[in-house]
Image 1 (cartoon, helix red, strand yellow):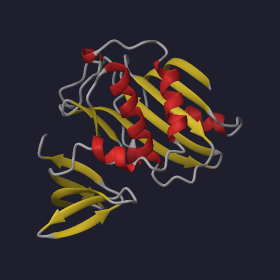
Image 2 (cartoon, helix red, strand yellow; image 1 turned 30 degrees about the horizontal axis):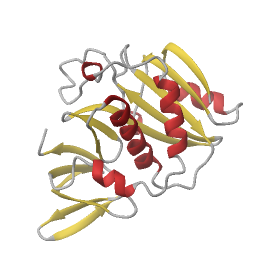
Image 3 (tube, rainbow, N blue to C red; image 1 turned 120 degrees about the vertical axis):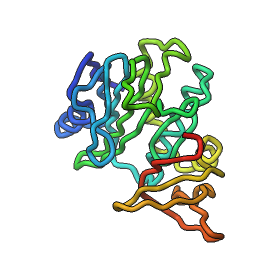
Length: 221
């Protein structure tokens, strides 16, 4: 796969979407630092140097579990190569030792789909991000990591039976969580995930399914 590699970019997602207007996927854009990185709902994504920020452009996929599939595939890749006990926090975060090490962003545009991955390799983190950590403390990373992860993401795009493995890697199942959605919060015990990848919350003997929202609190944080 062709990869456009940079030391610093405002946003790999923005450049990838711009290139997608003229270029046919698959291809990818990577940077070691972003100055205007963003995540879900356009929120700022802390992207200091000594990270890996990767955006992979794919053809449009009929895979409603794309984000979960990518997260599962990336987690398995990091676990296999570096021996790291990476876990998954619904719906788009990767955790190591109880702290966030990576986030995934999936955007559909006219020319295809752009899957973004922000991975904190070795950057020093500010005190304002106590729930995040870096992976460089846990192992050494090779310079071809961007190429390997781009291929992992590309293959994961067609992985529609990822849920069994996703459930195994989830760090939420059985824990009390608080979900923020549409300006309100809902607390309960994570009862797992249904076949559509929805978060199942048990409260008062009743189970509800949620397809969107952000888990803002768990029993282990």
